[in-house]
Image (tube, rainbow, N blue to C red; front, side, top):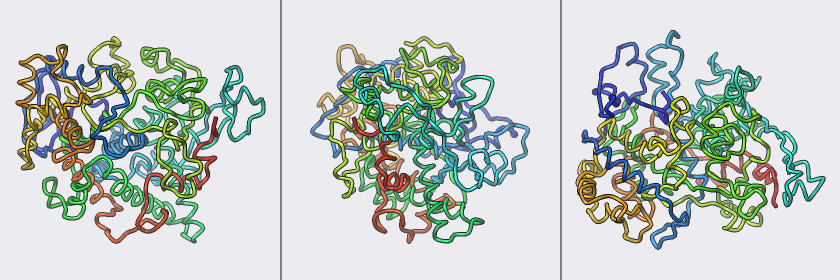
Length: 574
């Protein structure tokens, strides 16, 4: 079951949580044949009570009210490059891929069901069940070792004044948009009865093709694997064991990067260090052969990335502020994918509700990312002279209680809503409302309940309603926001997702004692249960970084693209 479109959650020991026709939570016990196949969630803390839907409606509206994206604040920590927003989404899909989502009539052993449902940080969203699996061989090249990549579609910009392809009739072939570029799109099925079928990404988890930034991140991991394969082969690793040797290195480098580069950017580093030094205190403390996914992580804590999203991005030399085609909008990043979009310039969100509109079946060449705009390469000494000025790059929004306004009307393809014919202003398109409704569905604990469970101080009523008081987060006491009854209800029992974001807002933009504890412990456990694990193998060190103690996302990108600026930024500079 794909979690972004999930309408039910199976919680161990409780049953299957869903909503009834009156939108009230209901728990049933599924049939045995269905139950054994379900992705397992667990409940870390106590059961909560649903929030009034009217309060959720107004709270979601306040969280997605139009506002200044600059979110400048005296409490802001050093910038987080925007690429980490979408790395976080890529990680979420890695944790929640259900590799048992196969035809009901297919034979799958109990061991296979358990192994392929475990929420491990093992890159199964990239590898699937491996080249030895008959169904998943399609993700691999002919050698059965490397992963497939795709080819972009040539697009001419000759008639657009100011674009380098127009002003220079013979641009360098390597920077031209009017050529097909091998290796810069995800592999695609390419055949089928509909355009949507042809556009489908040939990867284990097509959720990674619902936003272009996530899609290009997935592609970078494909290149990283393929480069590791080439490197190990030159060192004499036999082809018979080359795939597993490469996967082992890729997964552990990935985990190291998450532990040392990603997690400390989004979680209070003291919490991260405590968990990885002294172990977990609350989640599956005694370990065991398999893990579950805490419902508090999936439905609340790890939805922190929704507040990091911006409404527009400096994407490459073609799509940037001040350029002839303007800055890339969030809607465009949905449109130029195979899962949410149609590879055509969107005139409005409704256009994306038809998956078979548009003419192209591959990513247009002019939408290849310039990685320097999403990650900070200034930390690489020999790349300092090619680092772009701040106004040409992107930082993530601070983790807080305000979401950018475009998230109040999601394209239907992002939540499997194309068949519902929802009006554009339907509250079900509002991402904040969807998150709050999911919490009701599973009777998620409130923020106060989880603070008590962890033995930490609760946020005060003033902090819940006003955050830092600097106006940078959701304003819940404004005249057109929550009424007094709703404010009283919110401070008495705050939806966990909102509570965690408000806690981060107060904690200088990093998850604190409730949200940070949940995320750090789940990451630790997800690494521990992976086949290849830096938690179980604490003496492992990266070999593809600048030294044995350093491997960051920028190091992964540099290695994946052979330290070649022309591959990190294929379209060149303006």
